[in-house]
Amino acid sequence: MRDAHSTSSSHAPQDQAHGLRRLFASSRVRFIPVVSNPHVVGGGVLLEGLCAAFAELGLHTLVVDAGESSPKPSELASVDLASCIESLSKDVSYLAARGLPMRYINANGSAAQFLEAVTDAAPFADVVLLHASAAELARVVALREVRPVLLADTDSMSVTHAYAGMKWLASRAGLMVYSLLLASSPQLRLSDRIAQQISSCADGFLGAVLRDWACLDPKTPPTAPVSPEIRHLARELLLAAPPGAALEASVNASPLRPPVRMTAAARPAMAATY
Image (cartoon, rainbow, N blue to C red; front, side, top):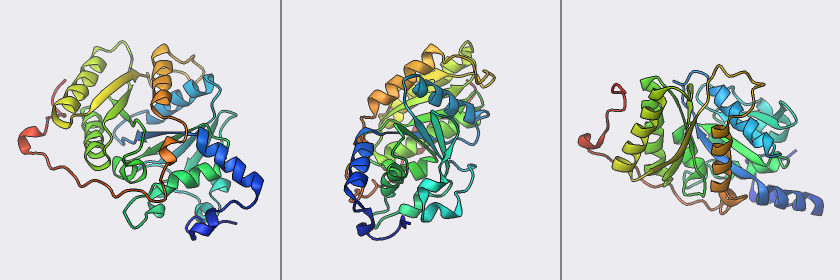
């Protein structure tokens, strides 16, 4: 068995076939960070919607679930990560990973090597949805070519949390372009107002961009067809995450950027009435 925290020699190919498999996996996998939001009701449905859209494109998705309320990883995760991956269907796999990325911290405070470990453990995955807090994501994907997905619903606390996650990632990880997935009915006018508010605050206070957004009704049956807007969002996320880009220079990851302190006047009241 291979220890995920052993020296770099453990990362050397064990044989030629192993090396080729790893090279192919790292060149095709796309990492999509999803900012966890404990205030969202039906957050799991949002992740399932993205997985369904990727499955339509013939892609296998590994959900790495490291959110604040996600299940803890298996005790075997530190020695055999691959054995901890659960197959949910022919198109989706799942890894319980709360706290797991932080086990890969290097001297610079980066956990970017976690991406490499996941790729090595799941060479069959075309897409990796890394669901984690903004603080944890910042240590994993800082300064990389990815587009984080914010999760929210119509509750003001969820919107405030989503914006806070964007602010953290913009200031600490240098990520400036985002997508938003709302747990609400697409026909609800409030959804438009929430997206517009987050977009306006992102541009005005952070210099960041909310590139696109979509709604998914949490009451939608799992067997329902993927909606056009979820399909569009999924394709946009894939285009924004070139295969293998997030893995580049993961071993010698740069230190995180220092936090940017905002004045009191620059803190928008995200919890205000929409």
